[in-house]
Length: 283
Ligand code: SAM
Image (cartoon, rainbow, N blue to C red; front, side):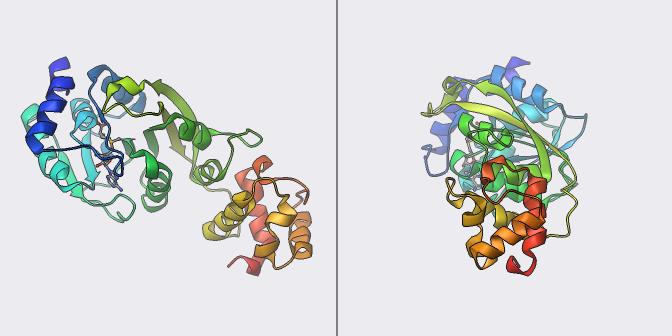
């Protein structure tokens, strides 16, 4: 079944035919290795016939792997020539496959055609990977499982636990929606053009948000403020949001959190408790 996927010659031929010059701005690095695609698809653990959303399908390397696995795919691609070509490529390889293509910016997508997807599988454009991931977690409740390829450091950050050096805003915000686990490392040599960073997969599984009377927006504002200056204590970092250092200290103590602690030690549940006690200060 190797022939079903795109190899280096086919990627170059397709790009040449379409006049595609991969751009850094759109994070265009295309996978030209069928083995890597199969590894990603296997790691995604799709159910037969499952509806999958793919972001940034590019020339279709991963899309073909998903279709080969029997998934019904909806793909969101920002670059018009790539979005136009994708159904053609898919039909050539899998004439009976189910594919919808949306030509849009994944940062703004608010609805998708067809059945709601239960899985998201993507090789994300690296410079906007985290906001796109959070946008999809927020807007598409139907998503239960996510497997994305991102820059290795970003994968570490998304999956980090409190207390880790790389724990930060992406870790806490992802934890609001899901449990995250760093998965396989992917060599930069499977891409054309070869990027100057290494990649890794990160797998997320939806969970209920922490039980709290604070809204997600309130909690995320506390998280943003807590990490705005990493070296500051929570008392100092939250004083702007609370109105004063004393008010921040009072909210932290009421939430049972040491005002001298730093954001990087707190769980998402603790951030939610702080947001509850800041109350009206964080609308
Ligand atoms: N999935 C393909 C692969 O594995 O070969 C391509 C992955 S490439 C790293 C990222 C893709 O995302 C490109 O096709 C690019 O045009 C697209 N893209 C970049 N920014 C996007 C955005 N904001 N919304 C949707 N697609 C985007």
